[in-house]
Structure formats: C-alpha cells, structure tokens
Length: 279
Image (cartoon, rainbow, N blue to C red; front, side, top):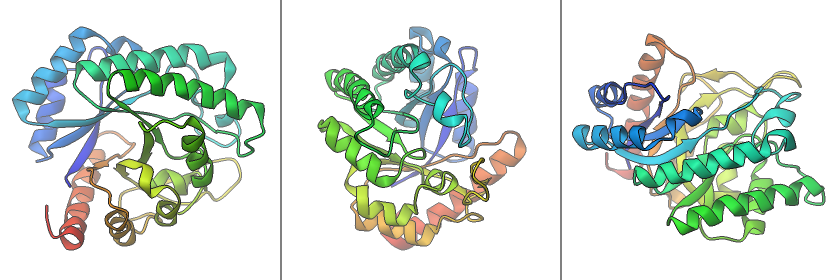
C-alpha cells in the first residue's frame, strides 16, 4: 500500500510540472482528475503517459468530473450534482463515457465520479433511471476491462450497496472518501466498511467535520483534525482486505495545500507501517 495524491488537470495544464511536483513530494501514485471536457484528448493523454513514465509515477484511477452547474450543499446539490438532474444527465453521461476512453489511453483501470444524491427510496422512479444510466457506464468500462467506482458522499452506505447489487455487474465498486461520508452526514466511514467493505477498490485520505446545520456540508479540515478516526479506519481497511493505495485529497489551493498534503502523508505512512508492518 502506498500513499498517493489527487492531481487535477485542465486542457492547458503543464502536465510534466504537475508530475515533477508529485515526485518532489516523494509520492509514487496519483489519481488523475479533470472536470474539463477539453482535457480528454489524445494529446493530453500522450503528455500524461510521457510524464508518468519519466517520473515513475503510477496512476491508480481516473476521476472524471462533469460539466454544468454544481452546488455542494443540501438544497441545490440534489438538483445540480451528478447524473441525477435530467437537464444535465445526457451531456454528463457523454462526458463520463469520453472519460472512460481517456482512461483507456492512459492505461488506467478504475474510473470514478460522483453520481449525485441517489434517492433513498428504491421505489422512487428516479432510482431505477440512475441504475440504468450507470449500467451504460459500467458496460462501457467492461468493454475496456475497466471498473466504475462510485465516489462516496451523497449516498448512505446502504443506498450505495443496494445500487451496486441492483446494477449487478462485477466491475462496479466504490472509491471511499471517509471525509465525504462525514461532511454529508451520511455515515461513519469505519462503520460503513461493515456495510460495503467488499466493494471498496479505492480510498481517499481526507478529513472533515459533520454538518452543523441542515443547509451546508460539514467543513473539510487537514487530515487528523476532523472527525475521521484514522487509527480505526486504517485498521478496518486491513480487516476488510483492502489492497489499494490511499490517495490524499485536500480541496484548497496554494502553499497551505502542499503543507497539508505532506502532513497527511506523514500521518498515513506512520499508520500504514504500524498496521501493515510495511511502507
């Protein structure tokens, strides 16, 4: 198990400099992310492949965003995020399918996204609509020998497990962001592993607090300062047989972001040594 970091790119990103920065932090794996459809080109893929080979960095997953309005809260979030809103669903589906093609060009197996606020009630017509849409993505991934992973956050653990069961394909899993479960008030990530641990194929290293009102998400914090109990979380990952990397995500910018990433790396590497007895 290695500690990685999330790296975001745009169509005009200097890819090599991004990989140089990761290398200087002595990090060996990344999840690559873009919300920019114009970045999903052969040229960008070639630059990514060249930089990854040059700097010896393994890309564990491609996190594919989607265009259009997005509000990260409890009121406008359900009507703007992911594949749930009908007004944006078709174009977002197209972008994610293009993302699957891009992932293939950079030799990445796992494709991740936020699906949105899936209905808690499985009898809600929107629930089966979304299951059908995700099946389209999963089938595309299957053709490419890829996996499709739900990013946790907007769904409870039970809803997420039910969705995977109802999709009924063996290449659908979860990228578990423990902070998201807490920040959205959807569950405790340690307990969530009892529900869907077998489907966890990717993990984010992020921390945050529970919501303090009914309108806004809880606050993201530097790792170790939020409500995620990383001692128990890392131990539980081992108990459920998780074999992948832990990818640090810190959703701020500037020098403080790098400082927090390096601090999170230190904490996670120490816990991994203690729990797994290895780097």
